[in-house]
Amino acid sequence: MAIWISRSRRIFNHFVQRACPLSLLHPRGSRPFSYFESKQLQEPQCYHEEEDYHVDIKHDENQAMDFPGGKIPFVSQMKFISESSETRLACYRVLDNNGTPIPGSVFEQVMKDLAVKMYSTMVILQIMDSIFDEAKKQGRLSFYMTSVGEEAINIASAAALTPDDIVLPQYRETGVLLWRGFTLEEFTSQLLGNKGDNGKGRQMPIHYGSNKLNYFTVSSTIATQLPQAVGVAYTLKMDKKEACVVTYFGDGTTSEGDFHAALNFAAVLEAPIIFLCRNNGWAISTPVAEQFRSDGVAIKGQAYGVRSIRVDGNDALAIYSAIRAAREMAIKEQRPIIVEAMAYRVGDHASSDDSTKYRSREEIEYWRRRCSVARFRKWIQKNGWWSDEEELEFRGNIKEQVLQALERAVETEKPPLTDLFTDVYDQIPLHLQEQERYIRDAINKRPNEYPTNIPI
Image 1 (cartoon, rainbow, N blue to C red):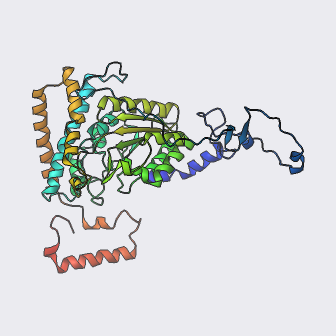
Image 2 (cartoon, rainbow, N blue to C red):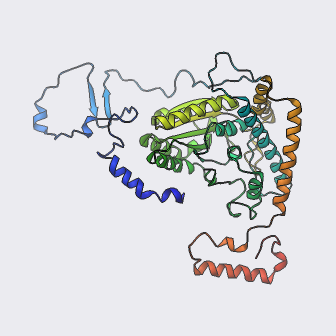
Image 3 (cartoon, rainbow, N blue to C red):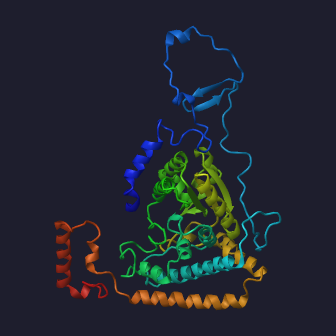
C-alpha cells in the first residue's frame, strides 16, 4: 500500500483543483448522470421567513421540489417501495451444461490459442489444488485453500484483463496470479515459507503477492481490500491510465461495512474499478439465505448508483465476455461495475474445514458434476482444438511438474532468523535488538530444538 499512500499529496492537490464547489468532483456535465444534483448547491439563496409567509405557491400536479439532494417529484398517494422486484435478476450465460453455445447468445469471440491457454491454465489450477491440498493432509503444508468449483471465475476473468490492470484479491484467486505468470516455484516457495518467497516467509500459506504482476498481497481480513481497491482505482483515474482495478470477494463480504463504504466511495469518485463477487453459496458455513435478503449481490449496485451484471460463474465464455465489457465501461466511462459470478464452492472453505458438517455430500456432488472446467473442455473439443490424447498427456506432465516444484520447495532452506526483525523500521530499535538476542540465547541453550533449515 505504501506506493499508493505516498501519492497523498497529489491526491490532495487533485481535490483542490477539481472538487470545488464542494460535493462536485467534476464540472457539471462532464461526468455520468447523477440523480443527486441540485442548483441550490451552486446558487444559494437567503431565506426570509416574513416574505415567504405571504407568498402563495401556485398548485401544480407535476411540481417537483429541488431539494439539496436532488430534484424530486411529488405524488399525493402514499406508496412504499417494495423490498424486492417481482422477477429475479437474470443470469448471463453463453454455454449450456454440455458446452454448446446457446442459440442467439452474444459473447466475445475467443480464438483457438486463447481458448486452449484458458483451458490448460484451468487444468493446472485443478492439479495444483489437488496436490497442495493432499500435501496439507500429509502434514507437509500448514494450510491451504482450493478453488474447486470456481476455476472459470479465476481464469476467464484474468484472461479478460491486461497486465496493466491491478488486482486486489481475496484469498481464492490463485488462478488469477497463475494466469499472470506466477511460477510453480513461486507458489510452492510461498506455501512453504522458504527463502524464495517474495514475503520472506512472513505470511501464512496462500497469501500470495507480486508487485511485478500488479497483484496486491492477500489479506485474511474480510473486505479490507475493497476500499483500498477504490483508492488504487482513483490513482489510475488521476494519472489518466488506460487501465482499471479488479477486486475479488465472496458473498459473505457483503456483511462487512467496508463493502458498502467501498461501493459508495467508488460511485461518488467515479473510479474505474470492477467489483467481482464470487457468489459461491457459502460464507464458510453460512449459506447465502442467512447472509442477505436481497436478490443476490448485483442488485445492491442500484442503491449506490453502480452498474452491475449477474453472470454464470461456471461458464468461462460468459465470464470472459462480461469482464471484457465491464473493463471497457470502467475505463472509457470512468465508472465502477459490479459483476456477480454465480458459482458453488465445491471444496471445503479451507484445509481446516469439514464442510460435510453443514451441507450434504449429495449437494456437493451435484455441483461437482457441473464442473466449469469440464464444460469449457467440451466446447474446445467440439471446435477441434483439443483431444483426449492431449488431455491425458498434459495432465501427466503438469502433475509431474507440480510435484517436482513442491519437492524442491521442501528442500529449500528458510529465510534467516534476522528476517524476523528487518523491514519494519529503517534502523532496528533497541527493544527488537533485545528480542533477537533473547531468541539467539535460547537457541544456543537448546540447539537440538531449533529447526536445522533456518539459518541463524
